[in-house]
Length: 304
Picture (cartoon, rainbow, N blue to C red):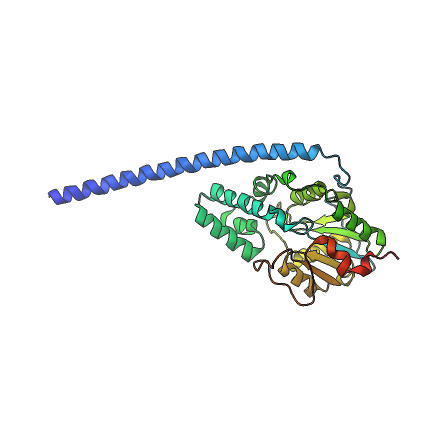
């Protein structure tokens, strides 16, 4: 009997201890979430204030971000598609790492998981679906617009991205050559992030439009999904992929561009190939910096 009572007492004690530890974890989790949300709120306010203060050339968008009706396909139209992240600016700025840290914090806060699980899920979703948010929406019911606000919009990009005069000069040369009709942004980010990047870089006025991953829709379509390329084609008014050029830092995206028949695809590899993004496909051209485009596509930069 004594042994039985002792066993029962231990079981009761263990049960109470588990309950106490669970409540403590919940309290820690709640405290972490509150601190995280307040940190993000302050950063969002700072980001917007800085964006509103911009006055340098190229800081204002001159195209319609969302067009109600796409233009009729033009069989003669020539379009150059530009990726944004780690392409218009250098990967060595470490914005990608900053973004991964932000995504990691979001996973921890919203899913209440530890660092190890947050890292595992983030890497898995990025590798399998091209975007961490796709996995979050598919398996966790996360609101993609809230994710965008808490992650991408909250990045302190103004501390890193500055007007890039060399980039601006290169894009101006391309426009002035008359060899292409439109310069088009083509990104897997939501429009807020993409537009903020080109405004900070001082090149927002040199593009004619943007195709982005619309986080407001349940079905998130992004590169290298062929539907994303068809969407860019439709929105830009491109009649045939044969009249288009494309630069991106993802080998998988470049592969898709080649598959759909783009005239020339340029893989930007600053240091070494990121194998998660895919190796450099045959048939593509490699550059280390976006300003090297005139060297590999000289025919587009010589005036008519």
